[in-house]
Image 1: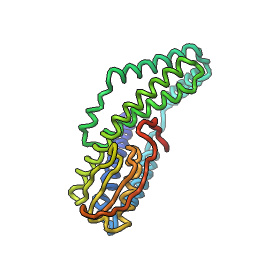
Image 2 (image 1 turned 135 degrees about the vertical axis):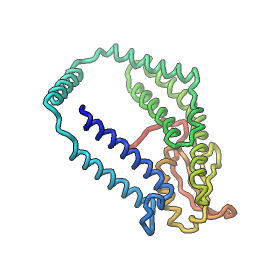
Image 3 (image 1 turned 180 degrees about the vertical axis):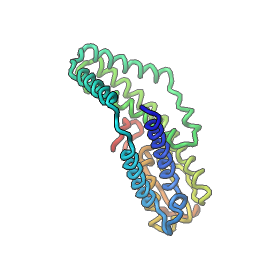
Image 4 (image 1 turned 60 degrees about the horizontal axis):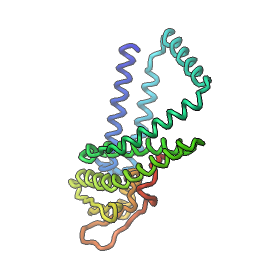
Length: 265
């Protein structure tokens, strides 16, 4: 890879990262990003973000330098090696042992104690989501092992599943409280106040003058719906002043914190 190509790829990564940061800020406060728009909304931010991302990718693909003959040959060799590996049959007993070893390692790591406290003190939602990624990895390991016909693998999968469920039951209420705290710090300057309530912090309460209008409640909820569902909030509640008795609400996650974490596209 020559210097020009490397520079282009690094520049693309920085631009994509910048767009991601702009998207997050825009979903929280659209006017920060769509400063030229008279009626900025989270949906408009999402639309501009998607359009800009596509344009950048198209431009970079157009400017991407052609591969040299040597690079084409090397790519061809790599593909042949991958095909050879795919065609080569794997020893079933070796694969079973690998699966058992992996399950045992995961069980032992949980028994020793998984320390998520570093994420608890973070002020970045992405750090909290990394805990969810760990849960998702465990889920994939368990689900794949449950398909095995090997009795020992099935028993190990069952044992790991129980331990993962216990970790999730402990962690999800903490993650929900921490997420609400981060959102509260972000929205405080906009006179929007956030808190959690209910068993396991499953309800998020969002209060602000902007929610006197029903459309604002709906737009705000749909902007946050995906991440609220990821953290398994059962209900989001909106009212426009703290003393208001009634509120509008949306329900989201209906499962249990112990359920395996599966990410859907």
